[in-house]
Image (cartoon, rainbow, N blue to C red; front, top):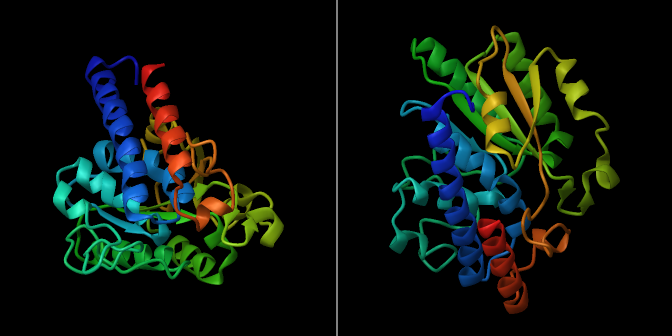
Length: 270
């Protein structure tokens, strides 16, 4: 992207937005006393890159890993689609913005998700519908790596390959953790890239914390096959305390919040 001054400027603007989003995401979880901060920080870079630099107005997005709703809300907030006042109700009584998307009253949230493993099927259905409607819209789905221990993901992949749904892109946040431990300890999938490729999908891999790498993986749509982008990520990226199983459940303590905010601000200054 460095050869195009306009693209370089866009990337710089995205970097500024990403820094703001990370800090806002940390504040969001601390104020709400909410868990799942690790998985939110592993995918915030991908969500921001996708929504700010890839998706068009007619494209569709499905958050299969619903426990990362906070990262999606902050992304939509950064685009002006959710107000600051609305964001402050996150995980509070009567909110439209719970810890898992409710799909109720928010135009950009098409489904209630977080019963894991269903996002690829929802995305495949949207992609097939777009074809029947002769629409050029593209469908993007963000999954966790742990979801690919579920049969529904593989059934959706088989269907998408059979239907040649090249208007479907599935991104997998491969941070190596799930609800009861590391993905390898619970039910190791070995080389997920090779396994998905064996089903006939167009598989790519990218550093999930590098916007340029993500953009490169999404630059050219697959022809005649769904695209799967495996994102190598770190749970709780940027927060030293959050690359752990505890960050899947526990809220941020006062000391963790202070240290985390200082670490993110140091990254901004570097």
